[in-house]
Image 1 (cartoon, one colour):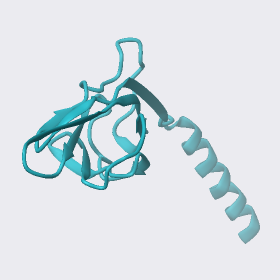
Image 2 (cartoon, one colour; image 1 turned 180 degrees about the horizontal axis):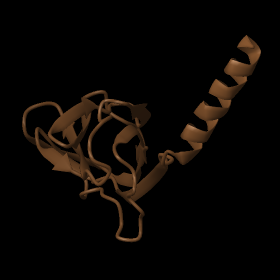
Image 3 (tube, rainbow, N blue to C red; image 1 turned 180 degrees about the vertical axis):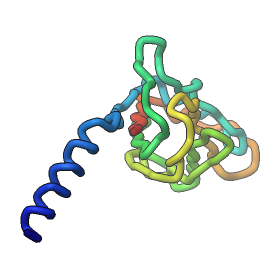
Length: 139
């Protein structure tokens, strides 16, 4: 009798679960160019990174962001990089990384990178930017 009750309960849970709407998971990707840094002490920003109009944004919230950016040549140790979105900024000093710090923000949140070469304002040999990409995962 107990086994029969368990079987009925399990069947009821399966049917109820099948009737619930599935949570769609997705990802949007934005690509741009890392800015060329020509002077110490100035903050440079990337273009605004947001989903394009064709991206279905049926999800509820961001779960994780991943990024990659690059520069031609060597990377000075004075370089400071932050990724900002939704009123939050995180350290993105590694040219490739991921974070869950933006989890819970709306799927269509726009982001930008901030780049700074520490030191007093001074001209320097340009640090030429290369490709920059941001992948935003959502549920």
